Image (cartoon, rainbow, N blue to C red; front, top):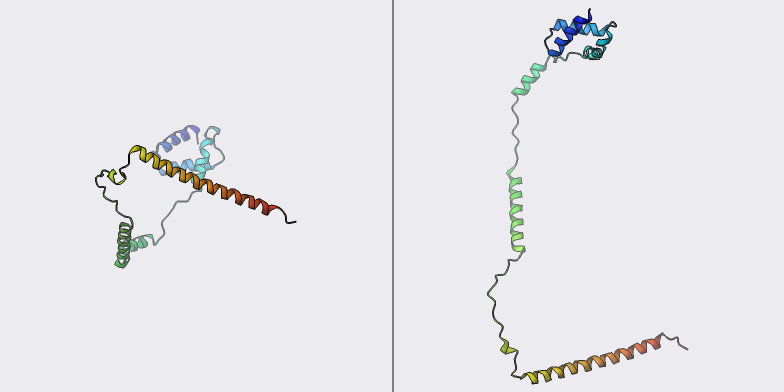
Length: 164
């Protein structure tokens, strides 16, 4: 077959305008050994098409399809008990969380402090003298505690010395 005719058939083939007979002609041409060098790029396509089988449906396909279409799906029975248990568990959990966390206390209006309870009728000088006396007493107690600690440290140092 002439290369010119094959080129025209290829153009029609790729445009989707060929008949079955023309496609068979192309397959036969490209399956042979006498393919023109400029057309060898198309040879792989037609050889792979030749290797493919036409897919056909099995003989009992229609019967199987009709059987599947006529089958009524079985209704799935789900016991209500499962749903009720889930709902009950959610309600119990909700109540538990509600009572577990304390409610925020209501904020009342701030009240003024009654300072008269802390005042004992002393003047500033008398209050200063009482404060100084309290601080002296505190200092004496701390100093006596300091002396006791020093004596205990000396006793511990003696315990470290080996017995002769």
